[in-house]
Amino acid sequence: MKKGQLLYLSQQDVADLQIQMEEIILLVEKAFHEKGNGKIEMPPKPGIHPGGGDNFIHAMPAYIPAMRSAGVKWVSGFPENNKKGLPYITGLLIFNDVDTGVPLAVMDCVWITAVRTGAATAVAAKHLARSDASVAGVLGCGTQGYTNVQALREVLLIEMVKAYDIDPERANVYREKIEADFDLPTTIVDTPREAVSGCDLVVTAGPIQKQPHQTIQAGWMDSGAFASLVDFDSYWHPGALHEMDKFCTDDIDQLLHYQEVGYFQDIPDVYADLGELVVGKNPGRENDNERNCTANLGLAIDDMAVAPLVYQRAIDLGIGQWLEL
Image (tube, one colour):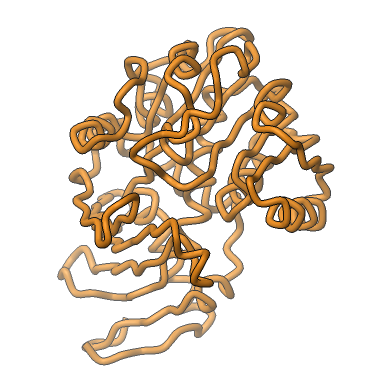
């Protein structure tokens, strides 16, 4: 830290740090361990909705004492951005000194959001998926479809990906990237059901919608499978969700907050949050026949778990630009 200055890290700067997914998973898991023991501070995230519809901009503050991390992420999701040549998710993260409150860094949060979301799915899969799960079905071939597979590979022996997207061109680009980066055989399927039935793992990674399109129907998901609902319940018919043996989330208070503003209007009772699973307050998968899922909302502790490493790695490598406060 340079007195009177903060470090600015662009999106490219953050990517250039070459932080590995296995590092991210360990950090996110530690954050959930702290959460499970009640040792974090994280109010439910407030949001605004410019333009209405499913647009959002959220403020996400958190403090993790054990990781000496405090700050806030200001992140937006605008589903129509792809028509303008812009990413769905954009935003910035402010990282503060826990002793003085002084801002230490401002960093782009696009890469951080992408990888920590996949890491949270991996943490959940360690507790809720079968240990021999090998076939992953992905619905939504964007950034989260990619990083969730990337993270799941770190905790399970994935042998095959079945991918579906409403845009065939995007699906083909996704297939090429997954096969090139991870050497994973990837099949583009013609219907959503083919990316659910016959899969051990299901990731729904479309845009978050207050009014779910309810594509995935009851009876599609195999006995013994695990699903990560990255897009909340947008892809899921209530009948399919009520087949779950264990419906989990990353934070119950935030899920209840989302219900108050119109999301998650017909879901099962929440079995546990990830913190409770990580510290063993609630058992995870108890037999090979359970259908389990997690609806991870995306927590500020995920981001604040990663921010200290980003900041320190940037200083060590001399990456970024120092700005006057």
